[in-house]
Image 1 (spheres, rainbow, N blue to C red):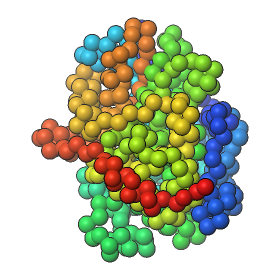
Image 2: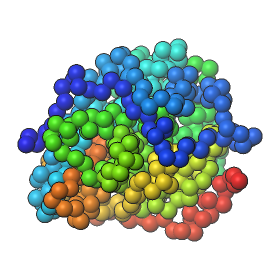
Image 3: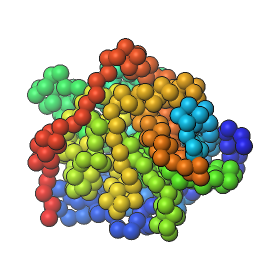
Length: 447
């Protein structure tokens, strides 16, 4: 059996999978925070194009991928499925471990799977400029790349702690042609208010989202683009799981464990969602969602309605949440520091279809180091959580088990984080229960 399983370009999926029609319990509708009534498409029109609003609310099980999007996808897709046999031997695994390698995209992660279609649909509707937030910088890089493909302007609000930790992301975004600001910034009312209250604020994804949404809402030529959480983002990311299904079939394998890290839920949802129908039909495949102990949204957050951003500019969505004004610890997995999670994923967790787990950042860096020393590639700090989850799953897996994890991005722009780890400077954070309870007090009560 070859170490790498490739698909030819004519085997690349031509449709995305939409899990919403297959969920055992229908999705709870987003609510207008003023009326507490379900939002209508026209309410989203100021920040999203009509085509993405339609996908956000779609009841179609499969959605065609436009040929123009497929053309850009072909720069790096299909991506390989790789047997991690050296890792298996190092940990004494009885099972097989594979990883879906999404690090070969122009942005070095899975994020262009949704940035490309989002920019395409905006371009088709005459939008000139896109505003977004980014945590670790992977999404900002992906959107600036996609905007360069369609000749659009890109403005990125990057969480300040990551902006300071990861300067090369800023350089890459600028080189693609994007403009980037550390969040909180002086560019928006939301940012200025936070800086007035706390000049040393290190930022959060919730705050950066507020700034990007405000930017889009106050510029007539601008729409907002989100790299995770939303339904249409999960739909676009299913190209990874759909490819995995074809690759496992070619290898004569059947996945028993699917593992991915979770911040907003895009790469986890993209991997596991295409396997949802067979799981509902009785397949015991496990969906393992791995998050940081410092931001334990799925493992310790409440499943309730909350705002998606700190300034409460977004609709209310039902999700696992730590509270919209939760300010996470400055761990190095910046893409996993979001207070909520994708409603699709949260629905699946509430139904008992997923197994969320949480680990300390030093545990994950240890797993990443082992992966580097065995498989040879440096993972992003976010991806290290999936590697840790796969290693833990392998401890109890048998010879007939097949673990597949999503290698969501490389860590070549995260070397400062590894330097801190190697010097013993990383601190483990575990969110105190009192902090969660205090933040949840400020969440709206929906009866």
